[in-house]
Amino acid sequence: MSPKSPMRTVGRRTLLATGAATLLSGCAGSLLGNAVTAARLAYSGIPDAPVTGDYVANLPYASIGARIGRGQRSLLILGSYDGPDRHWVSADHAVLVTRNGRLVRVFGIDRDLRDTHGIETDPIAAQTYSYEGTYHRSVDLGPQQYFGLQIQSTFTVVDRGDIGILDRRHDVLFVREQCSAPTHRWNFENEFYLDFASGYVWRSVQYFHPDAPPVQIDIYKRDA
Image (cartoon, rainbow, N blue to C red; front, side, top):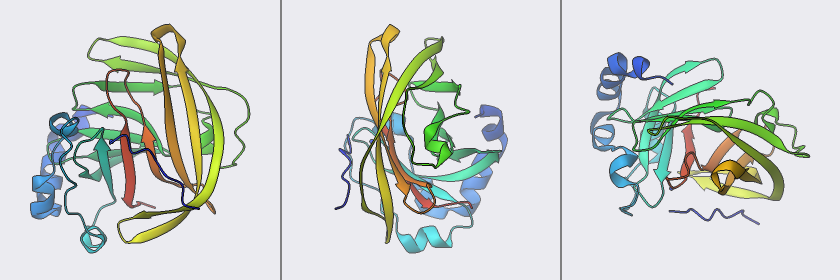
């Protein structure tokens, strides 16, 4: 059985201001030149950009596809990394930062996820498939300068199946994370599709702000 996502159809500025524009224009040609930030397309429902497996395979950089809400899927490349943090950059400098598959920062969109705290024991990063108990973290949000919003979550293993990303199939474990921020009356569900053999997160659907739709992230070309 193939797990199905609802497809709710889905860091650091200083690192990007100087190098990202050159990096993107030099490596990705016309396709990245047409990639747009989710700020413009978050609610528009425009069809996907024509990214192909061959095109991604020929890029010299790791890459992802990201879609916010019903917007167009945009191609982002790995602009930099800091330990486990991967900074994915769009052609016009929107930034998604992931850590072991978890979305921990979002910049360049109307609503920012400025930082995520307390994720040293993130069950998604543990790759043990043991999701008992309650997991706690906190987030800083913008533009309203809201700091330390507490989120608690529990995990459920839903199914094992396969998913397709571009021209490749992946045997995955579908894990649902049920999240709640009681002080903000914010309840939401994240979804993770983990490689059954390694625990690597190939696909996820993650909320990052109570006033924004979720981000769907597909790994097109992993960095390691």
